[in-house]
Image (cartoon, rainbow, N blue to C red):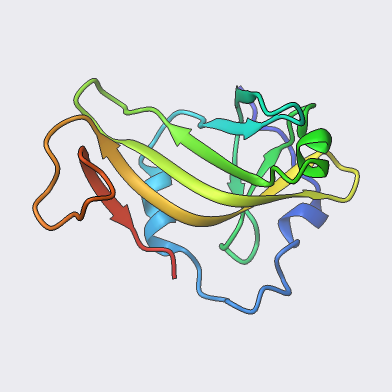
Length: 145
């Protein structure tokens, strides 16, 4: 299966981002998952929407690029610009990767850029010592500089 081609303007979209450090740890984690993630959004009428997308990094290494769902223009107009990307675990006892971020549509190309704001490896089970009260499961935060 061939990966979709993304427009060059999407790949260069974050060139003006003042933070230039690539998200190396997050990039390494995403590379370990062989499946495409699910993109979770909220539609204009406040309903959840989920679909599988193929993602790639932009040229700065700070934003992910994915095809925009058909419901995205209404979501953005309603102020629902936060999204989550969910990579299922590669095996039943493995970790899922969850990346939350702020999304924006690139021009009229129907391509989203996602600036990660939070990322975590997550699986059911007892929480890790010192992980804090934010999660009662086995979670490993991935730093986003």
